[in-house]
Amino acid sequence: MYVKCDTVKKLQPVQLYVDSEMELRGAEEVISVQAKARVDSVTPSAGAADVAVSLDHAAIYLNEDGMTSAKDVSVRQVKLTAPFLSESSRVICSAGVVSTEFVGTKKLRIRVMLEVSGVAIDTIGFENADAAENLCVKRESFGVISAGPINGEFIAEGSETAREAVDEIVFTESRVKFNNVSSATDITRISGILYTYVRYISGGKLSGAVLRIPFDEELLTPGVTEASKVFPVPVQINESVVASEVDGKTELKAEAAVVVGGYYVNCDRAEVISDAYSKNKEIETEYARAEVTDDVCSVSEKIKFFGSAETDGAAMSIVSLGAPAICALGVTGGDPLVIEGVVGAEVISEDGDGRAVRNFVEVPFRTETSLDTACPYNVSVTASVEDYSARLRQGGSLEISGEIEAVVYSETVREVRYLASAKETRDKTPDDELVISLYVAGEGESLFDVAKALNSDEDELRAMNPALEEPLEAGARILFYRM
Image (cartoon, rainbow, N blue to C red):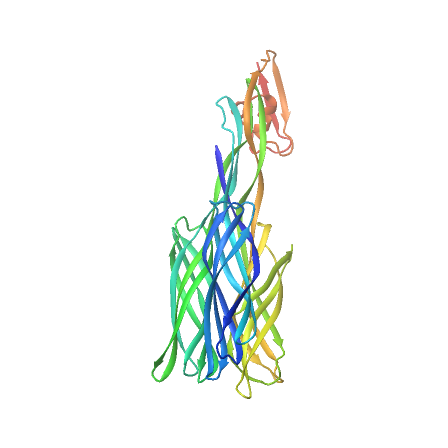
């Protein structure tokens, strides 16, 4: 009898620097370099998963004609390693840009810190011995999880009015925030907000906007039930933003195809033979132990963050916000759990001469939370920045604030003892003498344990003790006799 049980294992995130170059003809000053990442494909193999990631770059710079931009796309292969991975592993990955640095002008050198993370659904199991007809067996029921990937796509679209005329859209980047996830048979309902950060040129100057597009969608997710726990992950966002004149105003209209990955978990029951004996035969038994996951839990925590950075003192206004990123994230401790990390965001300000100035602000955050003690093992955390804002304070310092949603994941792991094999060796020597016993149950003993000790069986003991109550309490008296 094969007992199947799945586990969902977090892969260790990989952060790496990706270097590239761009030729900017006639560039006099580079204002900003934007980058965004998306996962194109995941190929699992023995001990690793090869992830193909596309990086979109956009350089915003000044030349003799004014503000302009240049774009480039590159593909990188990233390897996530784990000893349990195989060609048949189901791996779900996502990629994001943590930070972007650059030097040079006409020959621009760019360094992007890329982070790739993921989970793998690992199907494991063990072989429980089949019970021969002449064996008395003890069966134990326990919880196991069955997990599977989810895949879907939806379109989010919306529009907002820009502050001014838009000459050229130079870069867009989106973030997805899932506010609610629920499931029905083969259906997952998700709702949330798509944040699209837009940078554009208006009247020869750099400007920007943030589009907030709510969505409420249903995805076809075979294997999901009403009782499933579903954990969606936006693995690709392909957005486009166009500007058009509507009633004398400039309207920014965004449309994004959001590819959703992730996984679902169903909590099931399984049964093993945990002990066995024969009334007539001497048997040799072998027992083994297996570790199984029988539940997964998640708890979300809202974290406010607030920080500031010094500018050159000449900043007069904020013209554009870049998409925020979680630069560092970790969870430590037990009760309470400590969640801490760093938020990074690029903010473009403008000085009194109308010159655009890049500011990259990093803000630390920290909070404490309690974990549901029902799932105390293998704790990990993910986080995403919800809408944030920036403002200039007197003296020219830059202040940003916002809110983070951190989700702590954990699971319940238990060890199962099971019968691996049972082999008959010889007949038992029959006992021809009259036997009358009064057995006193010990702490934690079951009727099976008593029957095994007396070389009887549970039905026989119940017949001899019609007033017997189960489960047995310590000190319970069981009468046994054999003629």
